[in-house]
Image 1 (tube, rainbow, N blue to C red):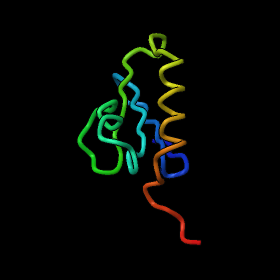
Image 2: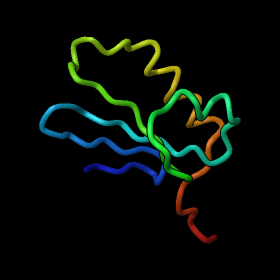
Image 3: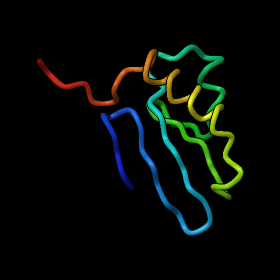
Image 4: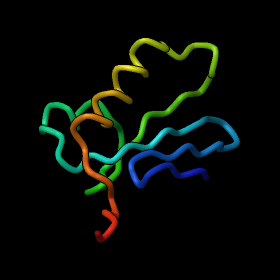
Length: 76
């Protein structure tokens, strides 16, 4: 699994790829875009990389980047 900025992860599993996102700070209707039941991270599943809607994925990444908070904020 590869993690980025405590807000995203990518997990290459045998039958799918999961992309995880921090949901801290997202509105309840935005959290519903994701799968899973985590309190701080949820994911999207992709069974075939060729079928990914790239525009939708970019919108999701931007949503998380602009509104969510890191899972483990760095102390400054």
